[in-house]
Image 1 (tube, rainbow, N blue to C red):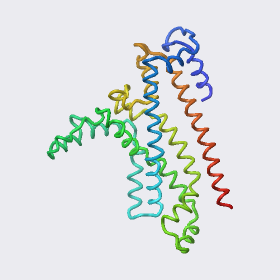
Image 2: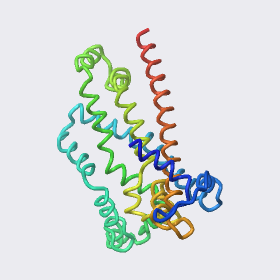
Image 3: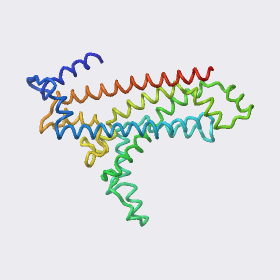
Image 4: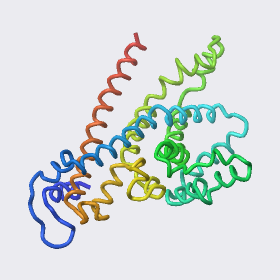
Length: 285
C-alpha cells in the first residue's frame, strides 16, 4: 500500500498518458485541478456530491441503521426473517444492484413507469435517473438499500455486548424504553458509533461503483451523480483530459482525495475521542 501511494505522488508531477515518455510539469496537475476553469468546476461539483452523500450517511442512513439494529436486538416478531432480508442486498454485487436499479427506474421499460402507465397515472411517469433533480436522491436510496446492513451489523454486535442485567435493572426501576435507550444503551454504543462514523464517511467519499453503473462514467445527466472516483476514472482512462488520457492528472486527483479522507478521519478521531472521553468523565462524576 505504501509503495503505490508514493508512486502515485510521483506520477502526479508529470504529464503522462500511461504509455511512452513522461514530461515533468511540477504542480501543474494540481493547479489545473483547482484553478482551470473547466476542470476545477467538474472537480468541485463531484466533491460536493461526495460531501452531500457524507451528510446523507451520517444523518439519514446511520440513524436508520441504529434503529433497525435496536429493533432486531430486542427480537421483534420475525426478526430472523427481517435480518436476512436486510442483509441480502449487502452481499449482492454492486453491478447487479445497478442493473436491478435500471430495470426498476428505466424511463422506457422500467417497472415503475410501466406500472404507472397501466394504472392510469401517466402524469407521474418520470425519467427518474434521467432527471437531474431526482437522480441524487434516488441514488442515495439505492446505495442505502444495498449498504445499510454493514453499519447495522456493527451496531447489532455492539448491542449484543451490552449487559442485559443493567437494562433489566433500569426496567425494574421504572425507566421507559426511551430512557433505557437514551441513558444506558446509547452511551454503551461508543465503539460502534466511532467505527460507523469513520467508515461511513470513507465509504461516502470513495463511492463509485453504483453511480458508474447507473449514471455512466460521466456521472449522470449534467453530472448530477458525479463523484470524485468517477472523475478519476474518466480522466485517467476515459480520455476526458482535453481528449486524451492523463495518468498524471488522475494521480493528482487520487492524492487530493487521499489527503481529504486522511484529514477528515484524523479530525473525526480527535473530536469523537475527546467527546466520548468528556462524556465518560461526566458520567463517572
